[in-house]
Image (cartoon, rainbow, N blue to C red; front, side, top):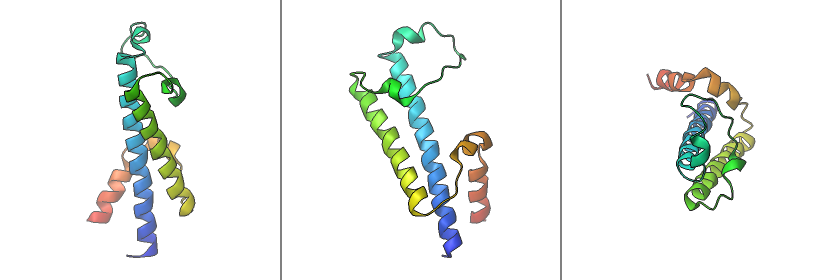
Length: 111
C-alpha cells in the first residue's frame, strides 16, 4: 500500500468518524427531547431549526444522555488525534456541505 493510499484511507476514516459523530449527536438530541427536554420539544414545531450544543446535554442527570455525550466527545477526540498525528489537511465543516463526496471517492478507489 502506498503512502498516499494509506493517507487517503486515514482521511476516509476521519470522514466516517465525522458522520458517526453527527448521527450520535442527532440520536442524543432525540433522546434528550423525548426525556429531560420534553417540555421544550412541545414548544417547537416539526421542522423548526434549533441550534444545539453538546453542553446542553451535559449534567442533565440522565445516564443515557451522559453515555451519548461521552461517545460524541470520544469520537471528536479520536478524529482530532488522527488529523494531528498524520498532519491531515481536512476541513470537516466542508463535509457537512458536500454530502456524499467521501462515499463517491471510496467507490472510485474500489473499482
